[in-house]
Image 1 (cartoon, helix red, strand yellow):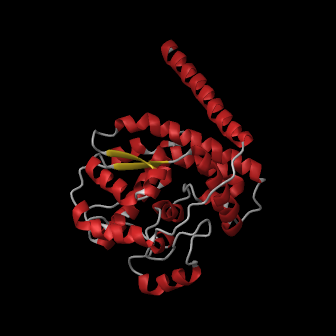
Image 2 (tube, rainbow, N blue to C red):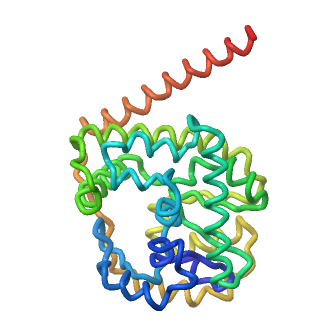
Length: 289
């Protein structure tokens, strides 16, 4: 919905599919991309199109070997690619290459859009607050949080559908992939909760997914107020028109039993204990040094 505000630029499905050549070869390649994608996202009923907003992480995966989503194509190596979300246990050279690649892509999108500001949606950036602030000290953030049990089922559905479509390997068993997913989400949000304190006051809006689904325009207005963005009134009619067009959209529902809740809960607690032990060991080592 933010991309409906003309003050913001954004990257599209086409640009993330062909990040190296979208500036010079759009007329040739764009029709090919358009013919190759469905009208709806395969993991849900949301509209999909070459000119629709898309996560830049897909484009970065095409430009760099360190893209998180490359793990969906090579699921046997998913644990390896998951490292490039939190960027904790990777060489400094990889981080620098990642920053250079990100800037290259964002500059191209900015040139294409002829704007001074971009709005990007990238779940993986949840764990990269520190790096992003070093790149863009005035960056503003919106975090959409959701019931973790719903996220669990949503991600399982995503993996079953997407990996089958895009992988070029015989994937591991779903139980193993599920473990990678749960590990990543715990690490991602621990990193976010630690680093969000670095964000200057007035530059972070946190919203509840369930509230946004029920009252999208109202929640969007709160985001604009929190971030001190002045263009809400100019775009409000456009926001409401779009929200009305999406009123029949059905959010997926899942049957949840106590065993699944217990598994998710135990996984989170186990990671908390392991992280505490790791931090204590690091503190003791630093004290001895």
